[in-house]
Image 1 (cartoon, helix red, strand yellow):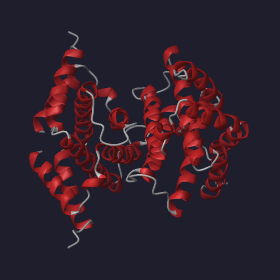
Image 2 (cartoon, one colour; image 1 turned 135 degrees about the vertical axis):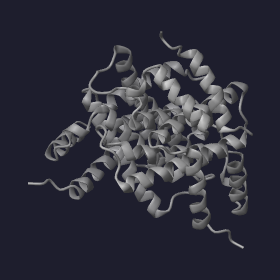
Image 3 (cartoon, helix red, strand yellow; image 1 turned 90 degrees about the vertical axis):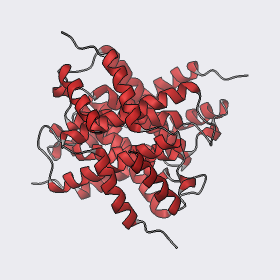
Image 4 (cartoon, chains in turn blue, brown, cyan, orange; image 1 turned 90 degrees about the horizontal axis):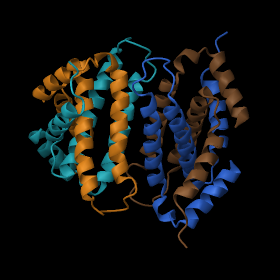
Length: 99
Length: 99
Length: 99
Length: 99
């Protein structure tokens, strides 16, 4: 994750894209990528599985979503993985296992 | 990331939520969490910064998004981090640095 | 539809909200409202129907989506209803009925 | 609006698409169309305006959003326009004009 953050910073800097990458713009971009993932499953009625094209598309979309999420988090010096771990602790307390 | 995947599998199994967690449903849940992140930045006009409440909310939403993204990817035995790294390689080729 | 457009213009003007209502901001707001509608159906597995609370919520969300859509369209002097009719003509040509 | 509802019912029926058009699927489709509209404004930093291609795209997306919204509402025998009018009444009470 740390390597990804550093790579993304360099990628953005090398292309002079920092001015476009406000948290607001990145949040919009993230929502667009998520919709592209939703689109894959949109008309599925059950467990039809994915075509090869859909599967390759899925891999790219998951990558894009992780990229934008990491960039937004990095704007606030946060790690998405750390945030996920902390949120999991809350969820475990919020939804106790029924015995 | 691997630890998060294992924790999420156990969390879901312990609560018998597997039947709800189709890729389709997880994609919808992901889009709802992303909208909650978008909502934080929705009416910002520039660099106003976040209130403490918004900042704490942001941390939770980033966590939720990472959680759902990891769960969807895990359904296809994929790691979001690996997908991000592979997508970055494509992006670097697609958008060459202008010298 | 025309009455709704006039009412929305007056509503925004009376509250001095014009500066927040850029097409970009309205598009984000629209996406947030749609996610609130998606949330209603998120974990449904079939035809379970809606609770009274969900049904009342649905009515409000449909209203909110229509409101923001009308406001965005009005920024470009367009009527969503006219756009829908024109798009339907395209769709009828694009997807011919199989006899 | 009533004519649009009738046209959409006929369009769907003629193509035997009713089984795909659960409220859940329609809500997903709506969110995908909204993301396509968000995409138009995603990297805009101010009032740059739209290119001709973006403008034509905008018209189509507004049409698509109105179409899916009308289809979802029709599943519950509701009119989006009526819902918007009712929601506006609530909004006027919720956000009183400051004198």
